[in-house]
Amino acid sequence: MMLERARQRLRSAQRVVVMTGAGISAESGIPTFRAAQTGHWARFRPEDLASPDAYRRDPETVWAWYAGRCRGVQAAQPNPGHLAMAELERRQGKGFLLVTQNVDGLHQRAGSRRPAELHGNLTRARCESCGLKQPLNAQEPFTPPSCPHCGTVMRPDVVWFGERLPPLALAQAEAAFSSAHIALVIGTSSLVEPAASLALLTLDTGGTVIEINPEPTPLTPLATFSLPMSASRALPALLEGWS
Ligand code: OAD
Image 1 (cartoon, protein in one colour):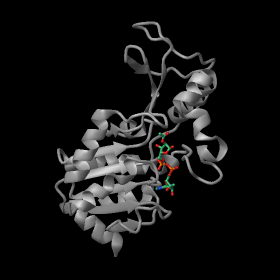
Image 2 (cartoon, rainbow, N blue to C red; image 1 turned 180 degrees about the vertical axis):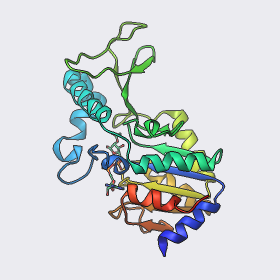
Image 3 (spheres, rainbow, N blue to C red; image 1 turned 30 degrees about the horizontal axis):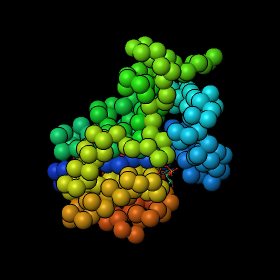
Image 4 (spheres, protein in one colour; image 1 turned 90 degrees about the horizontal axis):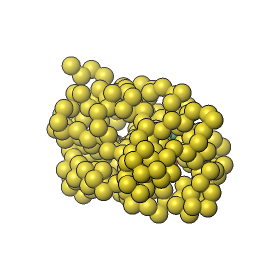
């Protein structure tokens, strides 16, 4: 059975890399981006809210959307998928990197130590003038924070469409996917680059790709094992029976 074979491979792998997307947080009640009825992009156009142009045009609207999402994730709790991921990191020790496209901080709250955050984190604000980052206080009534260092109005510490990914996080991810024995790809539609293509680096270098997603994605036909399950069921099941 596919799950059992994937479990055995994972158990014996020395180097493991993981990519997570919005699907792992769906069972914590955080909306994904592309779900047909409830996803963010079913209700808003990305260019109206998640782009540098949108922010320049209407910073209040963009900030209001991020502050609302921040309050949502702060009220949510990590689910068994996040907790299993932190457990996998503890078991693997050094040969492990968690890479996430998520901006909700739930991996850290579940105990993951240093996820490489490819798209930033909406629970932080960042100063575009001096680079200072700080936790976001999103409580209502909300006003966009000013930088305590230089006084500039800060922006959400996320990556918008058309912006570069954080170079260090991306370099870490590329190195880990290129040398991993196993890449686990969980809860992402595998549509947004460059995150979507990282698992191909693992396949190109002879590694195994395990995809966990109830729906098929462009990665599904290429993956070594495809588990059509929710993250909160599949991840604890993959770790079952380990000492
Ligand atoms: P998407 O909304 O594109 O995809 C979420 C995926 O999670 C879908 O393939 C679902 O089938 C799957 N899914 C849903 N529930 C799940 C569950 N319980 N367990 C496992 N999988 C589940 O979200 P992302 O792929 O994360 O970028 O989106 C990638 C990027 O596009 C985001 O980081 C964001 C967005 O635009 C930026 O904002 C820059």
